[in-house]
Amino acid sequence: MRAITWQGRHKVQVDTVPDPEIVNPRDAIIKVSSTAICGSDLHLYDGYIPTMRAGDILGHEFMGEVVETGPKSTLQKGQRVVVPFTISCGGCFHCGKEQFAACDNANPATTTDMSETLYGYPMGGAFGYAHLTGGYAGGQADFVRVPYSDVGPIAIPDGLEDDKVLFLSDILPTGWMAAENAQIEEGDTVAIWGCGPVGLFAVQSALLQGAHRVIAIDHYPRRLELAGQMGAETLNYHDTDIREALFEMTGGIGPDACIDCVGMESHGMGIDNLIDTVKAHTFLGTDRPAALRQAILSCRKGGRLSIPGVYGGMADKFPIGALMEKGLSLKSGQTHVQKYTQLLLDLIADDKIDTTFLISHRGRLEDGPALYKHWHDDQNEYTKIVLKPQMA
Amino acid sequence: MSSDAPVTTDRDSEVEAEAAPRGEKAVVGRTVTVNRPREEVYAFWRDVPNLATVMENIERIDTIDEGRSHWVVKAPAGKTVEWDSVVTDDEPGRLIAWQSVEGSDVKSSGKVEFLDAAPGRGTMIRATFAYDPPAGVIGEWVAKIFQREPEIQTRRDLRRLKQYLETGEITSSASPSGRKSESATEQAL
Image (cartoon, rainbow over all chains, first blue to last red; front, side, top):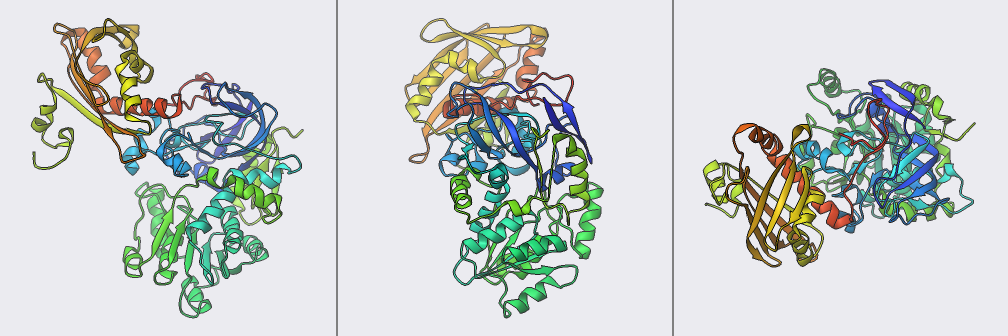
């Protein structure tokens, strides 16, 4: 089959590789009809994520047709399914609490040692995202092996085309959980850093979850325009002092909740971020939490922070004093995708959430390497890329 | 001992050595919680050949009689190391202890305790292994198997045990890659 493989920093290519096979009884094989390139794939593309190996198949947002099932899979051949990027066993303590991304069992025993050392406990499993999370082959390919297929994939009713439901695999539940973690109350103003796909879905989700106002922050005009269309007020940090603007816009109180949809590769204008950049490029540090620092300083006293943005290592100059003295509470984490897929599928079917506005470019698998480069170089025009492996 | 800490977590190796019933040199202890009832977890372990399913380096375990089993463990270059093990203590649902028989190439002891986790949270398995690698060529193999990273080996084996009991299978990320040398089902690392 064909697959997009990672070869090193800023190098991906289309390879011919062996087809996947059923390995365990609960497995299924999916023939991919649509697969997206995620913002977090750029962290891999930029070489920020350790434990990638040359030849790894990329992609954790995908859907398609069930073509093969193990004896204990509950899927049927021919079913159309969206597959959550998080792999979850359904039988451990965490799955029982719907903390699917924290699944104890989905990361193989041989690939959990490093994250146990880094984070204290091993990470869960995910498709196409380095060997820290299991080294599973991803969905930017013709076929994918899906383990624990009786827990993750959600069947899609006829009549809902791929582009409407594909983002159930990651970014839509991630935006939804980001808003849920902000614990929005009536009358709340919610500030959202980053208007990439997750940020834009967080804008929609925050409004659906009852936010009075949403203020979206970015520097790409096109993305701010989309946030505005979703109902957010917008701020461009190139033009505006964000903390001062948020202070003024909220009558001196500050946003009730702040959501960091940026993560470790934060841009930003401050000297702190410049130092972070130098350190990252000299391997003296990894994460650049400029957006998070600003969120902590901007948030009102007793407010809430939600961090869906991806971080991997340590952060310097983390304003722990502001966090403590203002009495902020903080929620974070990889998305417990399986917890939200049915709810969000229903909202899509009822036309309460539109996801198709996001897609700026479509292509074949062969277009993947070029589209990765464009996505990396032009984040203003390239808001979301969807690949169609079966497209002629 | 000055606290409730398990002895295998003590910084003092002499305290840690208390967990080696026959004065073995190396001791490894590890606890894992399995979301299954205590009786079921005990029964799985007591049926000793089951352990070959979840422990990476074990080729097979044969039952000799009620208390004794024969272990065949993989060594480098396609060789194996073998010994007999005898159960020295067995408290159903609570504890199993065993030792290699006198004169074995590998002197080892083990103990596993089955403790109730908090209500509704299954069973804590607390395993302690103690062993002395033998001398000679076989000793070098055994050292490679056990001593190189005995803690890593133990925690991986307990993870596989947990996976098997909680999910019915041993998690594998075997899948294709663009690496020419690997087959479609080769292990990820």
